Image 1: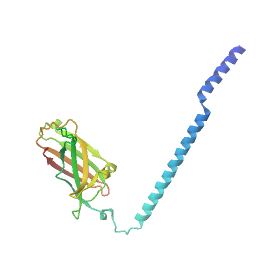
Image 2: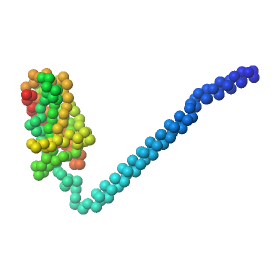
Image 3: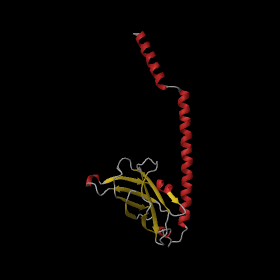
Length: 196
């Protein structure tokens, strides 16, 4: 009986030792976690300070200044360069490039912030097959797609169209929904394109 108790005690000690693992490794893991948490706290403090500064600046603006006074988006335009393109010159059009110009009340093109939803339609197909594709562009993605050349200024949105296009299409419809974040306004525009 006494041998059995000693044997069980040894087994329990061995199992407890296996579960505790390597104490030095656990200490190192905890040290790294603590360092990461400190970095997160510092980053949060920095972001909080920046937000405080923004609130302070905004609170000093005159009462009659509104967000709409910065720019007042009136419409969007899908430009004539919107079409299907063969980017790798293999004879197959694999890219849809959509060019959008947000326009304010002065008829100026502005770099408006918001989301864009794009749809590509072939209205010659049956109802269930007419929509060839749809894409959503977030504000973070959109701001990287601003393009200014000598000829024009616009957002240039590239989309892969995959195997949805046969090359036989005579005309397609591009539909764009632009949601302006500062004002909350939603603008819709569509354009018929003729793949060349």
